[in-house]
Length: 257
Ligand code: NDP
Ligand code: 8X3
Image (tube, rainbow, N blue to C red; front, side, top):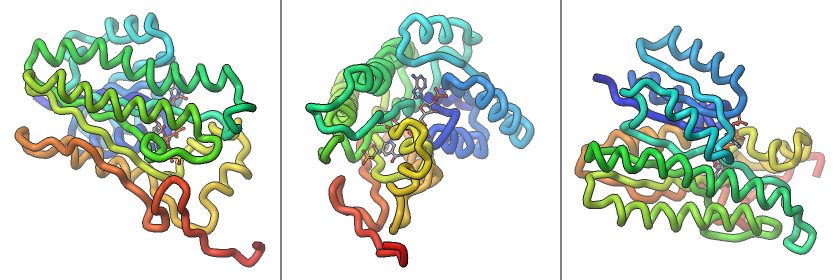
C-alpha cells in the first residue's frame, strides 16, 4: 500500500511544492488549505499526472472544530497519515512591537502555533496507536534569530522549534520521528501575504539576491521523509547562499539603486 502524506498549506508555496514532490514519488496525499478552488485544481493536476489518490480538505487551521470535522470526514485509511507536514503559516506586517496590531498577532499565533498543535494533537495519538509515523514541522530562521519587526512571527516560529523538540522526546518510545525544516528567505506568496497583498513591497524583499524556491525546501522535506526508518533528520536550517542570518542578506546593487 502507498504511504499517505498529509500536507497543510498546500494551496501555495512550500506546501504546494511538497505535494508535487511526494506525488511524483507515488505517495497518496491529503492536501489542505482554505482556498478550496486551488485544492481542487491541484488535486486534478496531480491525479492526471500520477497514479495516486488525492483527498482535499478545506478548513481554517485556526478552528479546532473545522479541523476535527475535516479529519473525521476522511475515509478510515486516510485518518492517520504516515507523514504529517505541518506547513500552513504566515507572517503579517513588520511593525515594531509598540505599533503592532493585536489582530495580526492573534492570527499568527492561531495559525502558526495553535493550528499546528490542534492538527498534531489529533494525528499524534493515532500514530502512537499504530506505532509509526513522521511529523515534519516547517519552522523558520525567524524562530532562531530575531529581526526588527519580526517580533510575534519570530515568537511563533521559536514556539514551533520548541514544540518540535518536545514532540520528539514524547513520541520517542512509539517509533515516531519528528523533524523540523527551518527555511530562510524563500520566494512564495509569503511576502505578499505579509504586506497585505502589496506586490511591489513583496518583490522588494527578494531584490538583489537569489532567494530559495519552494521546490528547494520541498526537496529537503522529501529527502527527510524518505530516509531509512532508523534515521531521523531532526533539524535543518536552510538559507540562500546570499544569506547568513535573519539580519544578513548580501544584495547586489541594481542599476536603479
Ligand atoms: P505561502 O503564503 O505561499 O503559503 C502559506 C500556506 O499556508 C497557504 O497554502 C495557505 O493556504 C496556508 N494557510 C495560511 N493560513 C491558513 C489558515 N488559517 N488555515 C489553513 N491554511 C492556512 O507561504 P510559504 O509557502 O512560504 O509558507 C509555508 C510555511 O513556510 C509557513 O509556515 C511559513 O511561516 C514558513 N516559512 C516561509 C518562509 C519564506 O521565506 N517564504 C521562510 C521560513 C518559513 P490558504 O490561504 O489557502 O488557507
Ligand atoms: C520567513 C523568513 O526572515 O521573512 O520565515 O522571517 S523571514
